[in-house]
Length: 431
Ligand code: ATP
Ligand code: MG
Image (spheres, rainbow, N blue to C red):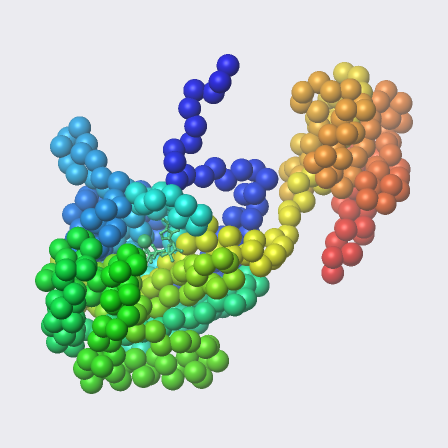
């Protein structure tokens, strides 16, 4: 019989053979966040739709084209989170985290949902690791955050990642810039795509982010935001750059980086990999000084970034970075006959209680098939118990790598003796 359905387009299963890669990456990300003094936040997978319209911005691709929005039985409009910043900001305000002292620093690993054309590195359900800092106006906060991303890539062994940096100013300097953009793009009205035409008046900076060939060609010669920065924004940007210089972090100032979300101000950045067939943005972030106020909170200069985990893995695979495989089984114990099976059941339980991985048969295989299985799961040791072993209280412990066999007690001393052998033969090798 055929299975009744398949996974939804643009979604992926993370299978047992690959999940260790995710666990490895997640551990590095979480640890790095901890070193920088961040604490994890977990927010719901769905929020009221207006949260995203207001924060991500209602002239963005995400809000206009990509959201999974539905009306509940209670007639409430709900949206699956397309990114992590909005939910974290809502949670900050709702729980008044900012009243407990500033800055507030949170990190998260979340699934995100965007109705996009599914292709390599672009999914409809994907995962982000993000970090957000609330209540930090100084340029050093921007520099620290960028250092943190840089450090994550280094710890993962990723090379050839370029940092693209820009400042998109504050509402003061942006007003003049937007006027200049309206004037520039206004001259090309007949060539612009429908989406760009509709955004020209309300949010002309969005036109710089358009992926259509014609519009992006026109955008190449558009005035750049850097020419319009006010004194404060310019100083802020200069400080960020000089701190990155002193930290030895290379960057390329790219005035075309405007980011796809409306809430950004001042510093914006992307980390881009050029190793794959095409340029892949693996991380995007920046400062969003106005967002918290926009959501009804106090003026709270803030900033954050997100790394796409599927793209991160894609790059690591393309660069041939090996993720260490965890040992899946320390010992496999075969019990032949009822008594020995019970003994095997007891022994694996005691090994597990001592925080090692142990397995014995639960499907009714014979001796040969069990040994084959032990090999397949990469057991470091095997041990066969039959009637003789039970009456002697001793069995042979076989090191599957060297083939060497050692006699070992299978009474109360088993765990201690096994532990000693294991430590000698494996841990010593590792250190
Ligand atoms: P893009 O320009 O590629 O559409 P974006 O600007 O929409 O990216 P952000 O909203 O900044 O992306 O999200 C941050 C990161 O999340 C991206 O750099 C990317 O790694 C990842 N990401 C975004 N959309 C997707 C997606 N549909 N599938 C997989 N990863 C994604
Ligand atoms: Mg996008």
